[in-house]
Amino acid sequence: MRCRSRQTGFTLIELMVVVAIVAILATLAAPSFTTAIANNRVSTAASEVQTLLQFARSEAIYKRSEITLTAASQTWSVKLGNAVLREATLPVQVTVTPGSDSDQGVSFDPMGTAKLIGGGTPPFGLSFGSTQATRIQCVSVIRSGVVRMERIPSGSTCSYS
Image 1: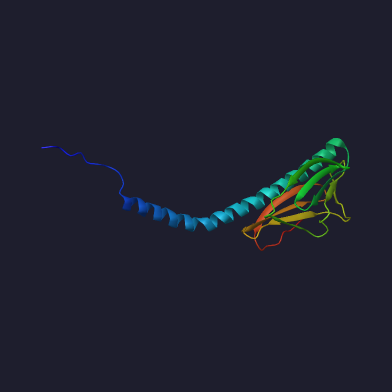
Image 2: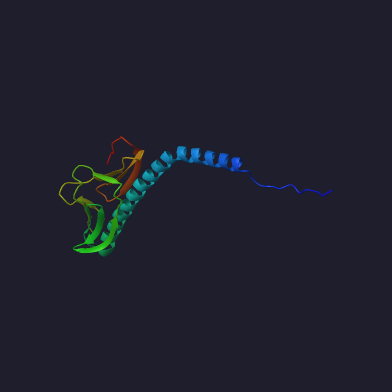
């Protein structure tokens, strides 16, 4: 009598059940993953502008000159006169809303003190959001030049003080 060896492996039905379960779980996880990506984009854009503001202030002190941060569409530029020192482009999915009198940008003098380009006194404030994000990032600069960032729930209002 011949001894039959037992074959091991998955049957087609077992494989199809596993694929169906994975598909259901992926369908449930997709919306929260989209929100996580949107929140990450908002956070990254706000951090990028915060870094530009800190760079502009430190360059103003280091070079003993007035340095400005301005925005044109999604591109933010740190300038010494007409020379661009650093530039960053934000994702188009992120909406940047300036606070009152903050729409033209901010400049730093050689002492690191901030002033608004369009006139007026700081605080300079920006809020970063997205239609799919569940939170807003607020970036502000007070008169002394200190840059601050905070995260608040979507639908709330930034306080730029």
